Length: 111
Length: 111
Image (cartoon, rainbow over all chains, first blue to last red; front, side, top):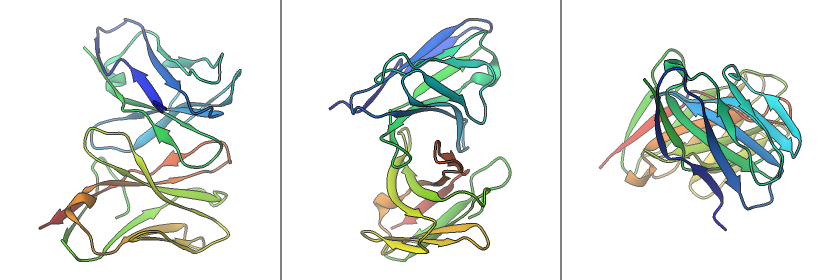
């Protein structure tokens, strides 16, 4: 099992550009999450999903969109990138409410 | 170890000593809690969890204590080792659907 796979690992965007961070898990987990972590800070929940076709906002959803068309994939879309979105983004999955399995993170810089 | 402001609280201990990391959680309705360890450049890793119907749970070298009256969680690490140096986060589940993280504490183990 690969676990949770995030791509890309690094990306530099210009202000106003758009991009999608990809997340895939091969553990047949129902729950998937996107967090962002600013330098020296904790993780803030952006969006989460409890199953295919279901998504919900977390603590900091503004400027982001998600979709969950399959159990395996949970892409995070950034529209009109802003410098405030410079952060490390972590995708995670779990069977239910329980231990989260994290990807290695995607480091995004918006200039 | 409570996390306020824009920087991580820090805890420095001598190798072999016991460490106690504290966390104040926000939602009295939360009924599930997890401690995570995050090493530099990596995603968080599960350490131990506890449900609200318990006040103590032990793992290998780690103990989690839960005080629901004051909404306080602590992680005790016995015989702290250099490999324990990391940032430690508590996370709570306020609605049985998602996990919300605290700001974290940086533990440094001096040889």
